[in-house]
Amino acid sequence: MARYAQRLIREKIETTPGTPVATAATDAIMARNVTLRNLEAEYQARDFAVGIEGAQGEDVYNIHAGAEYDIEAAPPATAGQPPLYGHLLRSSGFAQAIDDGDIVFTPLPEGQVIPTTTLQLRNGALMQNVAGCRGSVAFTAETGRKPFFRFNRRGRYAAPVAFTPEAHDFSGWPRALTCTPENMFAHTLGGVTLPVRSFSWNDGRQPRVDTYMNLEGTTLGPRNVTGSMTVRWPDLAAKDLLAAIRSGVTEPLVWTLGRDAGTVLTISAPQVQIKFAGEQDIEGDLGVTLDLVFLPTAAGNDDIEIRFS
Image (tube, rainbow, N blue to C red; front, side):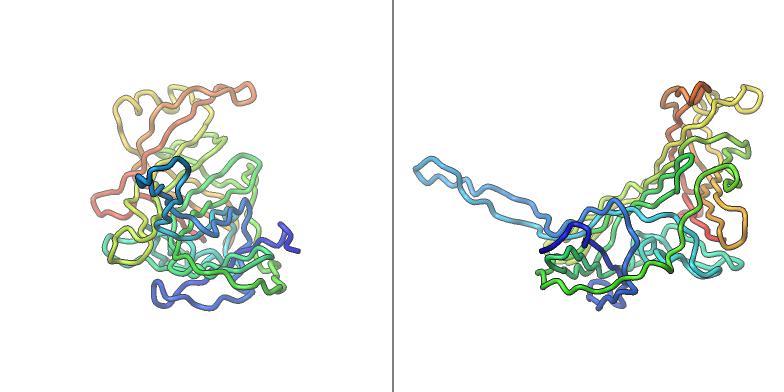
């Protein structure tokens, strides 16, 4: 009898986009808040005039599969190497590069092929190998909690096969640092430190399988990075937030967790516009929530950077 606790996912990068590859226990993902989408589709009632009352069957269109899940924003298992979930960032439209020993992810330039993965869904009753997976990505960090990336993955539906039990070892997966003062190195907007309660962003993409009738594959749609942060409202002399909002200026944003080499995660953006989203009571302190719009520079594809150092 299948048990809910047997739910698990594996993902492995594909050599040729859309061509499935075999996954192994070492490809298992240490994920939480997992939702398996074993079959998604669009349904349309046949609605023929047949001379009698009663329901009619529905036609099934655009059958596909996928999953949504969170992964802790942990550092790489080995310094100078990508994190164990680097292939998920790459198949979410990010280019991976090395910069002076750091692993850096930035938006992939337009026109370049986004890599794909084979996603295996396992639930104790069956297994499915979903090929050609791509997806969107979001990030959330809250005070006193571990930050995480949320991935929304979609790919080509595959018929299930019988479940085969197999041991999976997650001891090699690092845990993320907790967002606490001893771990936080920086959170600045325009070079001014703002005490931060929460910080989040998402890429604005919507994965869709088979957008065209004669072209197979998962498309992500346009990137539009937006976010939010709740901070303690600074004194006017330190930073005039309302003036910045009213004028629509853009300023660089830097969020850095970690102080020791090999454990540092930095998310930065060169041009962020802030919008007023309301005041907040932060345990008695006056806070403010700001909506964020991440803009690229004239160079393009630099609206956000994820750096492991």
